[in-house]
Image: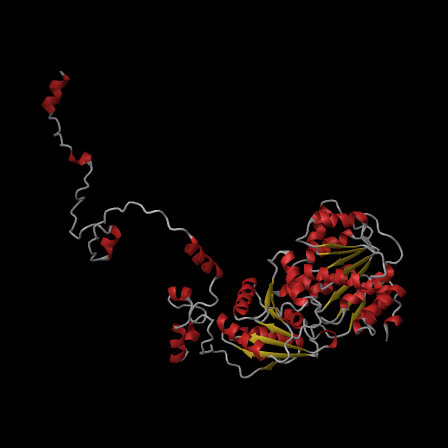
Length: 503
């Protein structure tokens, strides 16, 4: 089957040919004809199968007739992340090169004024994240009563990020006669109930089993010690020993781990960049653009990069942390092996990750091969970078999470642990050291006479009372007697004196 057999317009077919695509993917071949017929569609397909083109191509054909009015978009596409929304905008620029359509992007981190200018001119296609869309609507700058086609992309990611209440509110603002399209890589019960609520007699397009992984991806597991420096050493070993590594995405569960792994890789001479949700939009787009242009080889990212980012040439994916949600594993490794290409996904696992690994195997139904043996002990070699002890746990008496494991280590490992130094020295401490060196010497001042040395203390009580006191025993109040106690005591008056005074 070719794209010309799907009923697309001549302008869209010309754009597809210029982009170099000839044969549609299974999800595209099944979804495009139904969307062109303006039917509600519920599409389920694993990541990397071309879901974005499944709704952008038919929408371009449908938008050739008609014209948008100011602040009243004709179509609405909701995306869970800013990066994915910007990527969909690029798809409309590529496939809509023969159209004169206005595409507006409403995402956070960008000025409201620039977005309002496009809305005032009239947007044929409105691509937005739920939060920024509702902000414009509440300010009275946007009307949704003219939306003809409504698309919810990565619906399961919307669920994970807590956007379902916003989607329900947005659906109530749209006209009842709209066309609704849901696309998702997994189909949990919450998404199914949402689809049953807002889709009318939908056509379900499911080209692969939900939550399945691409067969072109070679999946592996490797064991590591539970300490962060152990996992970083294992990661560097995987990168150095990887075959034909063009570039790779390294996923971490927490944002602070993204920064730590990024600093570690940079210190060891790797070309690396960081991407997480706390970065400003300009930095996020610059880092992602550098990775796409191969200016950055390794991209250390949180799950913000796990959904929908279409970078076809990613050769490897490394899971520095095992994802706590099994669905995230499917999306993470889906960044490689896209569009029929081969890819490699390696997950670093510790002893505490067993329940997460069982959940992943249960969801995907595939067994993941181990690299080497399952050895969760800490490496005893000195890699020149990683920490050999935790000072904070040492102050707490060594009662950490892995205290029981530490008792079972051999004597040689314990000796090496004593020699460990702090990993990845904090850049702020180096800056402070430079500031102290650059600070001019203050002017000399008149020296004060030396103070007498304190007397040695014999016990802890004397230390609490003061360093300059002697050790002699204090009786009563000592020299600190209140003045009222030193006044003479007057004897009481007798009864005879009282009678005389009364006379």
